[in-house]
Length: 461
Image 1 (tube, rainbow, N blue to C red):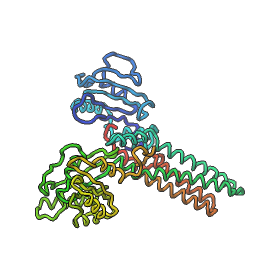
Image 2 (image 1 turned 90 degrees about the horizontal axis):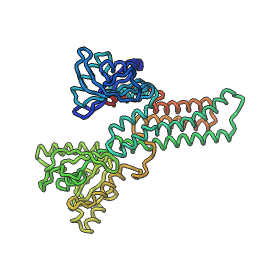
Image 3 (image 1 turned 135 degrees about the vertical axis):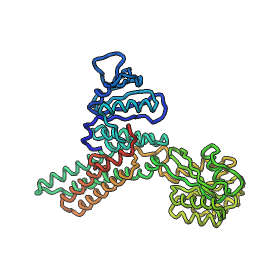
Image 4 (image 1 turned 60 degrees about the horizontal axis):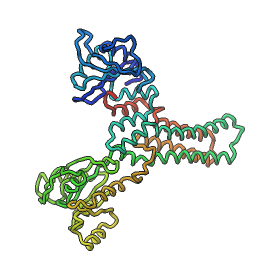
């Protein structure tokens, strides 16, 4: 969508496809109300449709006045709407055919079907929300856990925007002081003032570092983590999956090689969306199908965020050691199953064999240690406790890159201050920092970046 397309009036079905009690069609633009009234007839005739009121009526085809549906019309006059344009919503019955017919009537009357995310993009372009808040709308819709929902709501309310704005204002204050001295070159900044400037730069940099350090965890809350359950056949991988899911999802037998393909399910562990992947037992085999399953398992291990490598009362075998070593930098958590069958001596031997690898003892049969395992999964991928999540969290690569660039610009400015370089150089670095901060918030953003962000939205949002 180009900026000049803002002159168009757009419409889209804003509710999911399929049957439902209510289906909503959203219209935004200068001709929203006049076009809607060409197909909507209020039951109680009125000369004026007032903003933020609901009107009951019927939708009819203007060509022959045939009834299409009963409906409720709501009108939100500019600028008191999400897009800051005139917005109309038609609440119809939730059948797909009904909504499609209403859309056809609106398009026939000259409206354009909205592109994905175009309503939110108009809200951004019209100053209703900034880019971080627009992205929060996506995260709100896609949130997989309550914690993810809470973080998205914080960003939607402007948490990241406010944090960046505070840092931005601090840098602008420093820049205004420098500009004054540049305009009057006969003046020199005394040592105390330079020291104060450096301290302010430190505060700005530390504020950005605090935001940057939330990226990995923020990404986890937004996207979740992939956890692969691996190990030899019959160590209890499928039993563990069933325990974590609290349902019998995987087939469990005493026959080695029962699991031949991967089973994937998502669970919530302390607010983290965890994609659990149960894999085929790793062993030497001549079975073609089982061999393919083992090959897929090894490929999944390379992409895993965390590997739950399971062993049982038989301890760590040479095959296990090879697989664990092949994971390289991957995070591995050793899960020792059948804890109820292990003597104290065997437990000590297992701990010695594992050396420094993190581990946990469980019994899938007796459901012991499973909650402790969840705790260890959380601790392995997160640095903050459940109750100490930062107020401001970034979770997108573009946020990370923008903040990193701003930090580097401030560090260059500090070097200039330390080496008593010309004020123009310090000023130039601070402008770079301000530009990068503005890019994160979307105040200076290319059309390409905007299109990429808003293409993630569904049509109608």
